[in-house]
Amino acid sequence: MDEITSPILIELPPTSNVNDVLAERVGKGADKPMMEVPAGTDEPWRVVTAGEFDAQVVAVAKGLVARGIEPGDKVGIMSRTRYEWAVLDFAAWAAGAVPVPIYETSSAEQVEWIVSDAEVKIVFAESAANAATVEEVRGSVPLLTDVLVIDDGGLDTVAAEGSDVSDEEIARRRSLADLDDIATIIYTSGTTGRPKGAELTHRNFASLAVNAVEAVPEVFGKPGGRTLLFIPMAHVFARFIHVLGVAGGIVTGHWGDTTTLVDALGQFKPTFILAVPRVFEKVYNTAEQTAAAGGKAKIFHWATATGIAWSRALDTPSGPGLGLRLQHAVASALVFSKLRARLGGRAEFAVSGGGPLGERLGHFYRGLGLKVLEGYGLTESTAPTCVNRPSATKIGSVGLQLPGCGVKIAEDKEILLRGHHIFRGYHKNEAATQEAFTEDGWFRTGDLGLLDDDGFLTITGRKKEIIVTAGGKNVAPSTLEDRIRAHALVSQCVVVGDNKPFIGALVTLDAEGLPGWLKMHGKPPLTVDEARKDPDVLAALDQAVQRANKAVSKAESIRKYTVLPGDLTIENGYLTPKQSVKRAVFLKDFDADVERLYADKNKESLHLLA
Image (cartoon, rainbow, N blue to C red; front, side):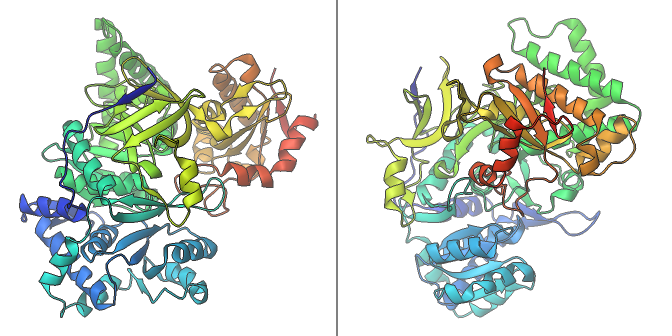
């Protein structure tokens, strides 16, 4: 199969927009819970009803109007994920404006580009530090009139200014946009070159959201459904789920501090979790290290193997045998129940996107009792095109197409997309827009994949990142990188070898995971720099690389790797906010390390695999 389109289930009126999604939620029960806000340590979360949320949205929208925001004007939001983000998003839409997200980690240069390119008139910054970053570039963005600080009561300030704006004016503005008008401009994370502003429409969000609820009601439309958003709402993935939650009747919470995420999950008790693969890797590695620290490493590893075997057996015609079912029940009682409790105790599903999860982790979590529904999409497709369903899952794939979404595999194996979820183009960049689409209107994703006979999509690599060795072998680095990065010691892995005689890799150690690994293996504390030269650490990395090599042919396997002294982070410019490596930037700055990989024979700094 090389092309498939899933028929749309719900057609929205052409004159509708995202405001109508909220209006329908309020109409179904203004007094029913819609969101919850953390009240404090060990205190119950405060319930916000649909009517209360809508009233706050209207109040802030009136303030925006009073501040001179006209229909079509751009409103910047520079903040971590929090309740106020949701209010500002819908308030901008209620005022007829276009919200433009800005990552709170953005540099002054990045802020300047987004604010100037999108012609943002007002920015809501989370903190004084974020506001200071915006102020650094104030002189070069003359259209920017106001910068308000959320932490300092910026929303209340704006709301208080709108008391003279009528309800009728907000109602009028809420009805101005139709499905094909711009709802937001989301700037791509910029793994290559300067970020481009993807213009996403009200159709993209509203139509895809209501159809996703209809297609996956067990997760997105389940009565009593709850989810805690903690990935950045500046990213399209969380932003879409934010709208999806409104459409599906879900109660949504927001949490911006990932260092205390486990505590937040325990308090909020979500029924489904939204995360990127790195979060699932971290949860597994932390659980493994915690078990080892308590002298229960053997039990944990046995339970893990049992859970994976049980999950894999589910995909066979006969299913798990009696013995395996009994072992799984014991593993669940001894190990898995505790892990489920750490995630709040109610989560039945997790939605994973932003990168490949990996077959082993997928089976581990299903064995644990958490069905990970891996999906696929991009900023330009309003996040999901495909997702696995509770009733139709193939671990290792990214699932079936959502209603109204089409997938086509080109001759060179590039994944092409078409449907009501595809953006309308890049902001003020017609050349990039034309380049992004084929002559017959399919969007070029740049990813490589295949469709099986049942319509399930599997991602096999990234077109622009394909490495061609000196011997002419094509290698998809993600296959190796994902497997190596899953190791508890590894933070990042970049596979190299373009025009080189063999494949190599540059690895960084995970400073958070290192202490637990050392303790688990009876070793004294080491700094990252000491650890990168430690024989036991290198032996463990050897094993991780060798396991990854089993997934590819000998010609594609890693022959040498080196451990870099630092790490790749958002702050130093090598990672995007969704934790993807900015490959072009990395290869430019670490060119000397790459070249040394192919020239240096010093085994103290380079590891040569047999």
